[in-house]
Image 1 (cartoon, rainbow, N blue to C red):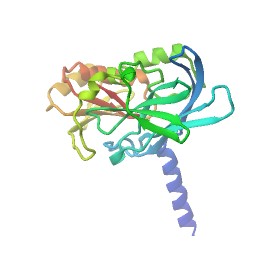
Image 2: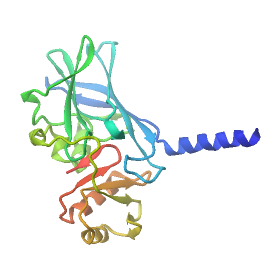
Image 3: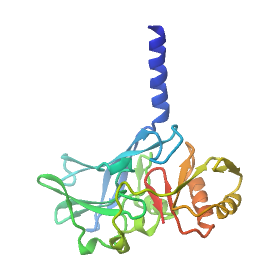
Image 4: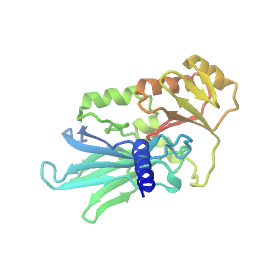
Length: 268
């Protein structure tokens, strides 16, 4: 009995250690009307890393929540949350929140494939959240939500602009990019060749080889066969600056490949 109890404790501790606590923060959002409101954001995580991750100690985003009151300044809570993706892909990421003609609207980007993001528009009607086709006015709109997750108490408009600009995010994430409309349809079963790059606080690791600097990482990647995608596997606690250093090193190779990282960020 004591052995079983000890085993249960060890399993529980293991699960707790592998699963990141939810990120929750409040965020200022500027609506198309010019009004600035405050909403609540939350990202839940599940253990196991990304769908291609081999490190079980990693966690990946599982569900993203966006909470607000409607009508505005009332006490009536409304919540939007991401829809599950096929094949265990990362969840939708909300890019735009707005109130249009008295209707709350969320535009999110989905992960049906990393080759081609899919924008999705949701409107909160009397029957709840309903998916709608994007309107002509939606294309080329700038993202007005924080792209990454945060644990800050409040993200102001100024902080959000700086974080989104310094995050090395692609145009397809920073705006509703019209070029996405021409992307080919790719099923969830579509397979890609992925090269995993581990990002640690002091080194980068590729195929079991360690590289001390970003220049060494760039040189090493130039000698490898061209992958369809490079997947960054971040050590727990890695800073945004360290992550961006790895992204810059990969771009310095001149390879025009997708770069995916934990948390549903996709660099093109």
